[in-house]
Amino acid sequence: MSVDKPGRGPREGDFITIKSYKHDGSLHRTWRDTMVLKTSENAIIGLNDHTLVTEDDGRRWVTREPAIVYFHKKYWFNIIAMIRDNGVSYYCNLASPYVLDKEALKYIDYDLDVKVFPDGEKHLLDADEYAAHSKKWHYPPEIDKILKAHVKILVDWINAGTGPFSQGYVDVWYARYQYLMQQRLKDRR
Image (tube, rainbow, N blue to C red):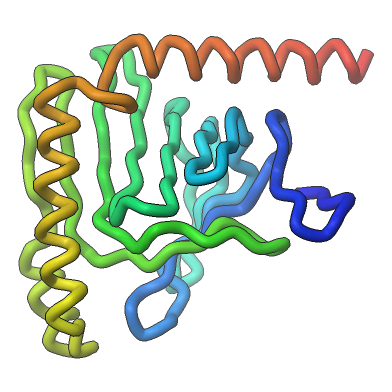
């Protein structure tokens, strides 16, 4: 990410790094080169497409399909809309609101995830991991209360097809990404 002025965040078309951490401060996962599609006072929308991901143990892999990512400064979750041949699947991380510095967009991953399949079926994942880490790292009762409240908000969004869970949202932001990539190709010629 290029930063011209102090305090200036990324602009549309910039690439940023995303880093997730665990409650104890250890690095969990890193995504390189997420394209920023929109920034606002409280949110960042980006897109990963064949993005390099590095796990905490050093393993590396590349994302298989385009995925629109949504981060917010007030909600304790982030949303990944994976665009697949059979429809859009969602992977939602229960996590702290993000912070952004010159290095990366950063958040704390709180283990719980909600997966939404193209047919709308929902699954809460990793409750056992959440319980183990909560005990291991002594998650404060306030964190547990906040996360439970935000799971409800997230499920309400899913059920209502709000924001990232609407087909229109996916269509608009994927089209914007394709346009920006075409512009980058033209600028290189």
